[in-house]
Length: 395
Image (cartoon, rainbow, N blue to C red; front, side, top):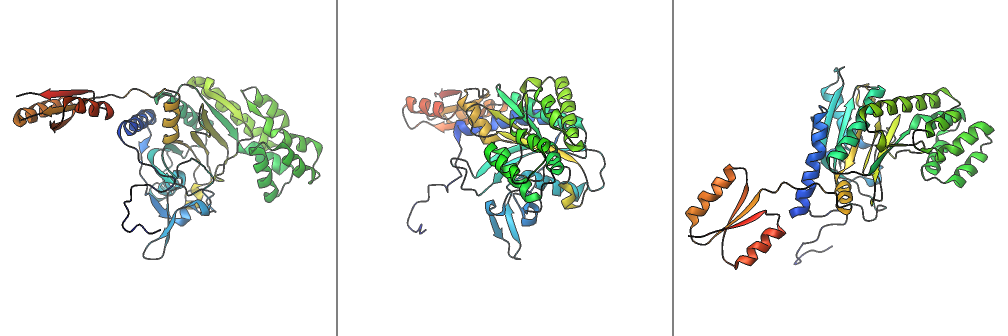
């Protein structure tokens, strides 16, 4: 495209400018969400915006190559803009905490980039916040992560939402019991996650499975709802791996009742993730007036092995842009602390500077502006730009 002689004022598809009160609102929600992560003792970590291609390669089980923004450095290495924080955190933990045996707690915030054309209306650059607990394989770690997500969403202002919990081992155990090959398992996983019961039935019938395991696999997509659904799932768990998955879910739920967040919890054993590094419990948070999950997470006990450190881990990420959108549509955005002042003076510049300094010393964000228009224009400007007050300074 030839831009010569044209004014470049538009952004590419999938990215946008955010400014003024909208950006102030986003920052406020991000701050409130992060406060709860810090209250659990999670420490901030920052990883590079771009990494070597191998950090997000197919072998890692993250974003497909065609959805990555790729470029080359002067040495010819393939680099990618970060599409997912978790592999970056895993790489970092393996590099700097290789010999650490005490669990590590990290939280982060930053922008991710995914070059996909099938998400109509979705941003290709999003702000995300999340947390990772590395080195703890216990149900207590799973419960802490889910409870912290619930409390963080509440602290950010969201009131009506559900965190739906799944368990990949339940489905994997049934596939092993049925002796399905990997290709068939992946195809079945796609049918079940999309709740395509006809496709799943046709596929399984072609494999001539025993009636009990075939029935169990066909009923996976119907195993969603409240805690009671776990008892129904238990009846289909005809192998140790699937039975262990249900036992784990029940223990995590018991712990979540201790946290007092059980009213926000539901279960969905048909839940699978596009990220193949998840190994056990996975979960997603949903609320009204959004087309997809606003947060996702789960256990990834073998991801760090790809970077040389054998350690279990669990974590989650929330898409801040989607959370802000949901709160805005639900008219539930937390109030902004507005300490912004606009001081307008005519000729008394010395007095204006002195007063502005005094307000700033008291913690007010103070803009000093010389009057060159009618007063109503400055009042309107203040209303449109998140100022709490306009002060006109006379001689």
